[in-house]
Amino acid sequence: ILDFGAKPDGKTLNTKAIQSAVDQAAKDGGGRVIIPKGQFLSGSIILKSNVELHLQKKAILLGSTNHEDYVKLNRWKALVMADEVENIAITGKGTLDGQGAELALQMDSLFYAGEIDSSKYVFPEMRPLADIRPQVIEFVRCKHAKVTGVTVKNSASWVQSYDMCDDLLIDHIRVESDAYWNNDGMDIIDCTNARITN
Image (cartoon, rainbow, N blue to C red; front, side, top):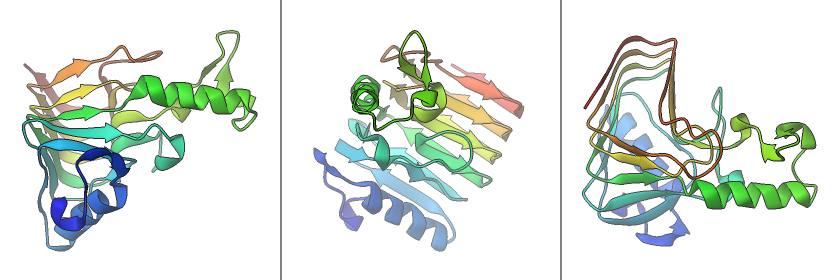
């Protein structure tokens, strides 16, 4: 991702640079997109068929704390997303950190300023509904998908969800899941041939 202009300073928004690397790998027929050591701030990254997102040791993909930096493909928003693609992966020894507490508090401040519709909030708890808070990972209707080795933490919503996927492998990951409200560690929804180990 450095070749596409990404900056490992934890402050520069790298969404376009990382997405450009993913798009180029897909255009070339597939490949590995490497996130090296450093802190890379980003909004939603959309994985494409035959692309592996690989986080090297001490690499941190930091979720933006601005909810406008996230998109919704089909279901909910997320930091790393995929919808109706195949042969995808998130691998390595690095970390995906959603910065969920900061992101949720930013959304709360917008709610109190009248910039987020009150119908998107739960009363009387005064908390934003799960579907408007970004997850860290969301795969929907994907085939031959895997997530291995990484640490996934600090989501503003559910941490990771896999919906209607086929041939899913989740292996040797760590989940740290207490940043905000209803931080489900892992949701496997209507999947087939799903294997979760270690």
